Amino acid sequence: MNKKIYRFLPLAGAVVLAAGMWLGYMLADGDKTSTTQRKLAKVLEIISDEYVDYLDMDSVLESVIPLLTENLDPHSVYLTAEQRAEANQKLDGSFSGIGIQFQQLADSVCVVEVIEGGPSERAGLLPGDRIVAAGDSVLTGTGIDADAVRSILRGPAGSHVELTVVRRGCDEPLKITVVRGDVPLNSIDAAYLADDGRIGYIKVNTFGRNTYAEFLQSLYGLHREGAKSFIVDLRGNTGGYMDPAIMMVNEFLPAQSTIVATRGRDERENTIVVSDGTGRFDDVPLVVLIDEFTASSSEIFSGAVQDNDRGLIVGRRSFGKGLVQRSFELPDSSELRLTVQRYYTPSGRCIQKGFARGENEAYEAEIFERYDHGENFSADSVAIDSADVYYTSAGRAVYGGGGIMPDVFVASDTTGINKFYIELANANLLARFAFEYVDLNRQDLNKAANVKELLEMLPSDSVLLSAFATYARQSGVRMRYYYLNNSRRLIVRQLKALIARDVLGSQAYFEIFNTEDPVVVEAISQIRSGAAANVGLDVSKQ
Image (cartoon, rainbow, N blue to C red):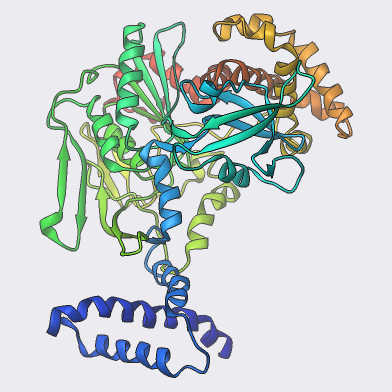
């Protein structure tokens, strides 16, 4: 019993202190405070004045406010000013830094890509460069991680940082001064033509301030190049702002189609959002890819497509986040992101999965429990509440209470994944080999204008796998050829995709890796069969 009491003491303290702080603001409104609120304020005053040790109440409050939000729901959160700035960078679409993509290989910071038009390109930094120091900060060795490197390289726009760079072909390290500036963060990882140019594939990694503009540019660009249908890949997209998702799905819907509804305590703030009829792609075949990490705004997009029978949803059950947060900026630039509404798909379902207040770890762990239950490998293992049923525009049954179930289920692909492959991946040997291969052959590989030309330059699969096996053995990995051959196709595909990324950029990775991705392959098959253009039919048996 004593253990249980101690367990709840931090929460009690959080309630007392946070309520007291809140009360301080409310006192200005006179008689609005209740007896209980005044009581809490008195407790806070007593603690501040009489506690045996002097307390910095600001510091104490910073530590207990998060405890209060943790006991509301899994998505209400308190952010310090620093956390708020970091969290907003990705959604705002830019940050101030030097403008590179890097990876740490063999205890070195290796430049994989120099962002076009960014500060590093202007300063003369090149892919393949190894940054060994930034000012007085040494960037080699095992004692520095990627987050620390990012912290050192980023800084206020206009500030200078002198980089010490080791470059292949140069006898001495180079000193390159970079003037930090705004660096764009793209929401679109890839936008290319698949299936001999007939299908446009767009991979969206978040819903930020610039996502709609980027998406529209990709959509129209692929259409001009000949795309007659589209795949929108939202796997791994955990959401972001709601408005970009609404504007993006509006491009695919005819006028007066419901997109999303929100409801909260105050009925006057409830909303229903419908399409405005300006979308130019309301009749093209459409497939949306989702998985267990597809959440929030991604589920708004997917739910609107599914409930309006506008396209096919392919993949695995989505995360299940149906709560809407509102941001409240606090006086010290910290922020309270508080759940104020639930959102509902056009059929009327709330896809928020169940949770118990204060048990956020269990809430997050539910994703991994799906693996244990076999859900990611068989649609029959998905627990669906048949009583919580809703119907799409064409009368198809869909269900609420825990994510969006795809129209076409595709099991998680574990082909070629064994203990040996995991050992190679954990040691980062695939990425290291790809980087060093490109570094040795960069002059020739840079002549490739596209993925097709690059693949023609690479050795045969057997030669590439053999070279990698030698590299892994020299790196201290005990070679197990049975497992190596078992993972052969996966390793070769991964190596080619990583080499392409290091030469041509991130999009090239997806162009290669997606060729054997079962979810993408299934999406293309559904478009070819005509199912994506006839979604009102029963697709459950396709």
